[in-house]
Length: 112
Length: 113
Image 1: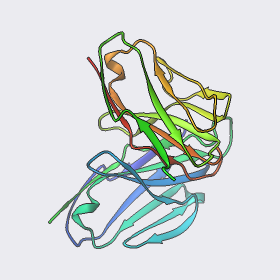
Image 2: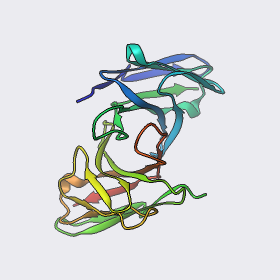
Image 3: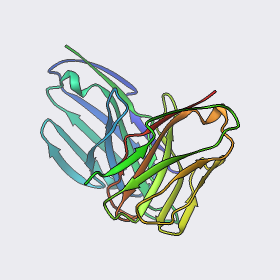
């Protein structure tokens, strides 16, 4: 099946620093989403980005589908950015289209 | 819109008991799914539905049943709870199963003793 690998697994930042999280996937996809799981366990949709570049405030994301990777950029990090960031993809062929496959996440800790 | 709602938020079961986790959405989405999240891992798909009356298995379906009698509701049943089913359960929905953003509920934290 498709593999989804996220790096780094853990990241510690000082408040105000910038960071880049990476998601590699092993097959052709028609859906790629980035989520933030906050310390209370809630999954928050950040980006739906099967291809191209999007920006939302201090966060931006780029997916290069032909090279099978996506990047999530966090600028001027804040303590509220702490939590786990998940990348999830869905295949664009076969009977299981639409079913998301998750990476194991990047755990981000932002220190004041 | 309330989005995707799940009840209960927390539940403790004894081994062998059964229960139903409720999931509802008010966005008229055709596609709904259930995932479980174990410590230190991403979410894994249990069951999914592409519309009322249609369900199928995901990656980890054993020990769970689902049905989809209406567009709005997609309950998950644990028939004989086991400690291995201790997990956090998330329900999700999207307009269609192909190429649409999925939205997740707040989760149900289940402990089986």
